[in-house]
Image (cartoon, rainbow, N blue to C red; front, top):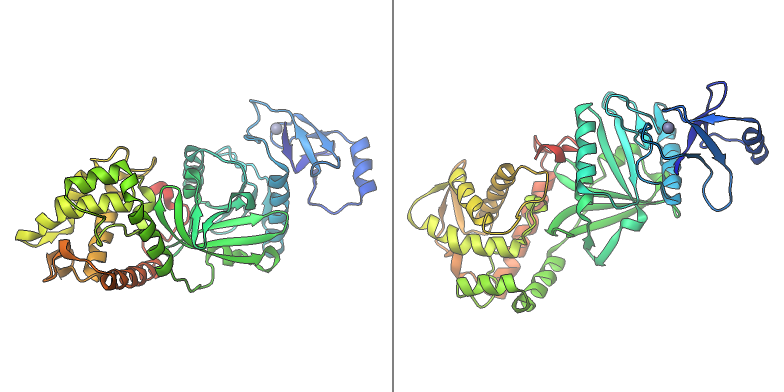
Length: 405
Ligand SMILES: [Zn+2]
């Protein structure tokens, strides 16, 4: 069964559970009325039970595009909350609108010069589903706003969160700052997970900020207010943990053996913004890239960004499935190369001599070591990352642009 929050009565009037009626009025409607699905016209039943949120029960049907996955109680409740919340701020808010062109039914749709589709997602979906929905919305000029159920917020450490593979495709952007939105439908609290930086495919550094739904505005959701964050301690602790456990990981052991290293070098393991499209740990690919490619490349002459991107591409190809599905490996590689070179420049290991051309500085890339150096690198990385998030990039100002990279 699918559950709908609205249906048509015999007079083609839209009956919505978000309308205010007394219990006896609802009972009267239930007894007297026959209801149909607004999209396929199939008969639906009004359910006024005590176990679940009130809804219209719709038989699963191949002919009707309104359903999809079954909707949990939490999903129905969250959808209602979001509808009321958005409708208070924008009159053109619609519940369960059917977009004929793309056969989509966003939970809440807000008509505007740049329309929004709010999608409240509690259940686990495939990355493919999210990717396709984003693509269809983008084609119609609609920005999808993914709001995950409170059940999906999984904190691993103070600033470390578990991110499911499909959830990455619901990442939102304010300028270049990536963030996630969660709504707990029971407490009516919103959590914005700010300044998200992927560390591993299912792990991210992020800073949570909680706010009651009623205090949040639609514009906060698209452009959250500035928030001060600090990741140096968290990343430092995480780096230490990876280094302590490096000998238990077969891939690391192999890599360290290849380059005759005793541990991961200081120049590797730096989460970059584009890391979120990769399935290889930054400790692995950066170790390999520095030792097998970069240290030789810069020995003789200046190198351009394009040349370095070509090297990075062959470095990444040594790993099995380095890229996440539905991204453009060429674009990802070129972004990564640009970001990593910029970071090495900030570390003082490279010098930029022309807009996209670098040479080695006096400090040897391979010989960086020591606690003080690590602290210095941590501060440099952090400043550089936050500066990057503040910047309004051309490709990343549009929400839902996941489809394009
Ligand atoms: Zn239907």
